[in-house]
Amino acid sequence: PRPIAHARSPIPAPEVGGPADTPEADPPAPAPSRVDINAAPWARVFLDGRELGTTPLFDLEIPAGAHLLRLSNPPLGRDRTIRLELAAASHRRVVVDMLDDSSP
Image 1 (cartoon, rainbow, N blue to C red):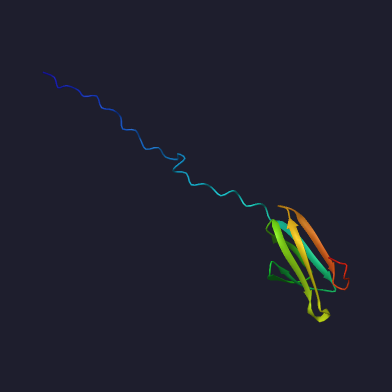
Image 2: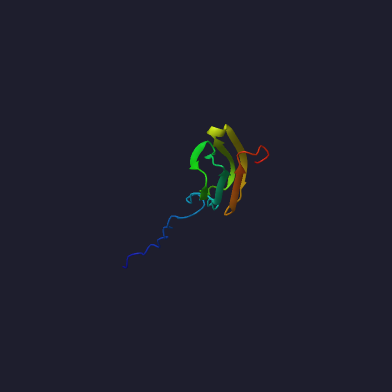
């Protein structure tokens, strides 16, 4: 007598990369903006409370979005605060006359 062959069901492989196994990828960060900042006669520059240096400052890489820019000239007793809304991959130039009260 011949042995009886039993049919075996293939064991399915576990699914990999399905919705439950895939971590959600963070969307890519928007491209940064570039900003040039100058003041007459000169000013210390602060962005969102962090000092960046003294004018002139060129080609600063700043994340897109809303920022608070402050320029200060202590000997003159002058401060200027500017709200910046920067679009992704844009280039913006800011020039401030520290002696003119109507200057931004």
